[in-house]
Length: 93
Image 1 (cartoon, rainbow, N blue to C red):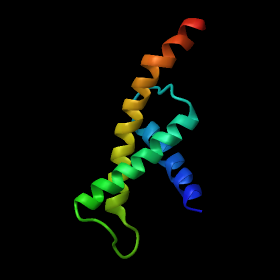
Image 2: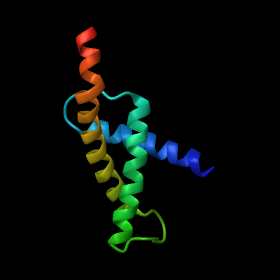
Image 3: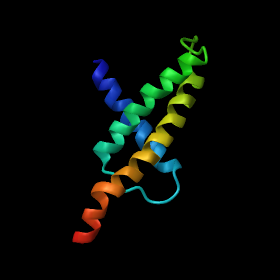
Image 4: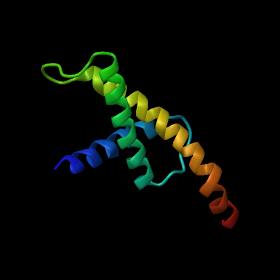
């Protein structure tokens, strides 16, 4: 069940990050989901470093760290995708 939640959270974080980043992102949905999952993992690590481990109720501060990390990872990942695979796809079209 943990993997299912990781995929769902990664999917949602990736889509929110894509919506926040200005301009068009060219990475496919599966890659955006993976970037979102990485953002959740990195955000949790950063939150833990700041002393936010578990709070009663909804843990908003941890979610903010996850979202910021996801935005950065989706942005950098999309740039890397376009630098490698994206150029080949644009040349074929």
